[in-house]
Amino acid sequence: MKKKFLTIFFPLLLLHASETQQHSLTLDEALQVLKAQNLEIKVANFDEKVAQTDTKTVSGMNWGKLDLQQDFARSNDAGNVFGFKLTSREATFRDFGFSDFLGGVGQALSMSNGDFNAFSQMMQNPAMADQLLSTAPDDLNYPEDRNFYQTKLKYEIPLFTGFKISSYANIMKAMAKMKNLDKQKVYKEKQYQLKKSFYDMALLKSSIAHLNVIYNNIQVLEDTTKEMIDVGYAKKVDLLEVQAKKANVKRLLTQMEANKQLLYHFISFLLNQKVTNIATPTKQVPMPNFSDEQILTTNLDIQKAKTGLQIRENMIQANESGLYYPMVGAFAEIATADNTFLGDASDHQAYTVGARLTWNIFNGGIDGAKVEKAKLEKLKTASQVELAKKGIMLKIAKIRTEITSLDSEIASLKKELELANTIYENYEGRYKEKLVSMNDVIIKQSQQIEKILQLQMAINKRTERVFALEKLANGEE
Image (tube, rainbow, N blue to C red):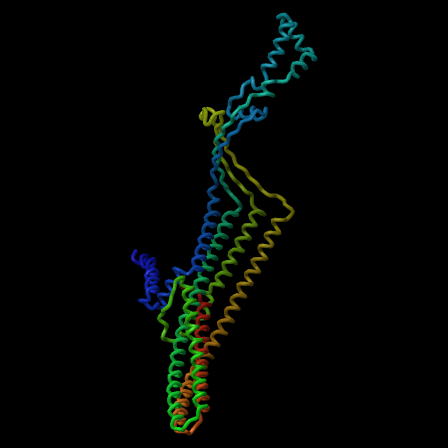
């Protein structure tokens, strides 16, 4: 319960602290906020829940369906009215037109004066019999308007579908797993962007600190040059060179400050809240210690490819159901009908139970073609899985090689920067002694700035490559 409470309220506490600027957001805290607040991750969560709902929809087909149907009708159509009465068990001989038929029989009796033999002879007369049978039954042909209320409850359930439902249920479960992997991939991508932004910010702050030192040194050099001009040991052009270099460093500092603000805007976008102060990492990103085999096991793209292969296997089973197996279902129905709603429901009730077997004997080879297509799709997907593994292995080898090369480059640039700093300090002192020109000092300072920027770019690229390797092994939370 305590853990659940912290999971819900910790991001809110961080949000409040960030807004009031009483707290510098650490990377670990930002990762928690990211998972709870990032809008793209929330969208991916909804996609996963939709897929899980689809899984329940397919599984529910095993339980059949129960429908309640309530009909209301009014008609004077002869067929409808007779059907209404018959359905509600209220049909009488009058509804068949017996009143008109008996009227013809009564007329024949009258003509025979009650003589049964004469009546029998008259009825055997073809003309008389034809006239009697040709009489239109008025009650049947012209019935009065009638209301019809029917309440029907029907339950249908599949007994055997040739494993089609179970196959589709497995497919939907695999689709839900695919959405879960998509969600994890979105989170890993946003995690990568956030971590890289934090380390980019650390490099920016480090570069700004170096440039500020250089800027202060130039300021001192400018003051020294002014003093030397006053005593005639320097020229005005020396001061202009110093001021030009000072303006150049100021321009670089302004650009880096702007990049800082852009990074803060991007971090705020990722965390879906305003962030203006973070605690940047102080250590270089360590090299991940997982093996190539571990990366292949946890890589989300390979897991998605394997899940796609499972879907293809179940598609084969689903298509084979229509080719090799019959479909068997059962149903039960109970109904009541009357000319009033639920009138005499118990007397007018009726039931029907039954089962149906459907077996497709021949459909022009369509089902066989579908099975063959599904098998080919499975072979294609299996090849794609192997291709994905080969592609990931190639990326792993490439990134590891790049990181090794960058480690060597960074070590070399650190020594070169240390040398550039020493040379600049040496030239600055020699300038004061009039042993070198201001131009020489500016050149050495430019080399110093160049090494700082080169080192920043190399460290930045190494950080990006390490995070790229972590993205390949993106199976861990």
